[in-house]
Structure formats: C-alpha cells, structure tokens
Length: 235
Image (cartoon, rainbow, N blue to C red; front, top):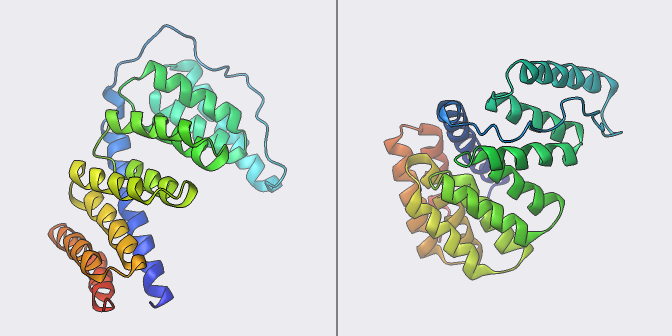
C-alpha cells in the first residue's frame, strides 16, 4: 500500500475524531451540574516543567497556566477552565498535577467523560497499568457511549499491548453499535485495517465500504476518496 495513502487515511480518521470531540466538548459540558463538596486542586501548585521544553515554550505555557488559574480563582465552577488546566499541566510534563485535576473532575462531574478518557490514556500510555486504563475507558463509555476514541484506544491496548485479538475486535464491534456517522466510520476504518492486515480481504472490504458510505452521507469527500482508493487495493 502506498505510504502517503495510508498516512492520509490515518490523518483523515484523526481529523474526524477531533471534530467529534470539539463538538461534544464545547456543546455538552457547560450544562453539567457541579458538586461543591471539595475546594478542588491547589491553584497555588508550582508546575514541574519538563527539562526538554524550550525557554520560549516554557514562557508561553506558564503564562497560559497562570491565566487559567486566575479564571478558576474567580470562577471555580468553570469546567472548561479545569480541563484546560489539566491539559496545560500535561503539556508541561506535570502528569501528577494533571491526573489530580482529572480525578477531581471525574468525582465532581459524574456525567463528564473527558476526564475519564484522559485518565484512561494516562494509565495506558504513561503508566502501562492496563487494568486501570480499561476501567477508566469503560467508565467513559458508560457516560458517553457515542464517543469513538474510547473504543479505538481500547482496541490499541487490547491488540498491541495485551495481544488479545478477540477483545480488540469485540470492542470495535461494540463501538460500531454505539456510535453514529463519522465516529462510526472511523471505527469501521480501524476494523477494516485489522482485517486487511490479517489478509481477510472480504471482511476488510465490507468494513471499508460501510465506512465510505457513512462518509459519503456526511459529504466528507476527502474521506470517501481515500477509502475508495483503499478498497481498490484489496485483492
């Protein structure tokens, strides 16, 4: 397979997932109830910046962190600001502080799935604690079952980290059943690629065609063209 085409499909999937996340993140979260039972993480925390960060990046990020903290001091119920702060901590390399924020939010916003997903990513990629990662991803799925990244992340963990092919396929099939439109198309692409790698062209074609039809319905011409090219390369 042409490497540029493969990269194009991968980036197409990434863009689809990011678009879905932005729409969900900005549209649903602000209406969630807030629990006042805790004062929250310490906003006077001194950030442990990674030594690999350039001085210029350090200065910009530190300024952003301070601005986010100021916002939270004036409005501690601003969920978006808490999520921004956690990502800023993560970008700085201060994973401990980021995790503290995500754990706080997952407790005080029980219907918010971003923190649960991010905790799943942290325990999967940083700590290699697959049991905890699975638990957090599963909690995120319970809260937001139509968000595709939870399923594809678990697929990667099951397939590559744990070498459990049955669970890898099952989680994609679960995701296909729970998601819609381009989120579903993205999961179908991953499933098609799995079958293609196994040499099962019939199942790969079936999933690619289903993904292409969803992309066509969404008028995503670029994704349709990429998937048509991929289908044409199957034996």
